[in-house]
Image 1: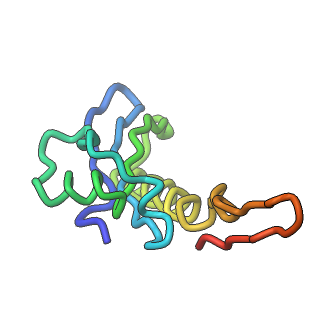
Image 2: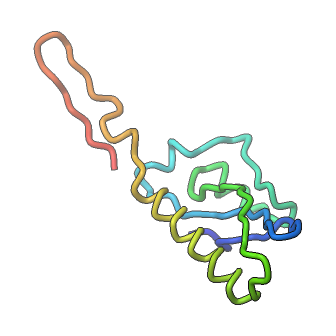
Length: 114
């Protein structure tokens, strides 16, 4: 589990630049692993960056437009909705489901990756 879900990085007029951290399903963590990965947020702890490097957590930096004049509560709700959609995407997106399946010319060996 990520320590935080949403980190606001910058605000420009009605735009918020945010880092979103999502939990990666265990079976796909090796696909997200990158030993060079560090968070875009300078306040990330060593443990946060280790989780990113190991693929335990995925990070997306995005700019979100919020309606002009929106209240803080409305902006918070909007960003929470964006994070919920991101977490669902990480949970549901699995292009590696058949990665490593082989055919030797006679027989298929099918792999199912979570």
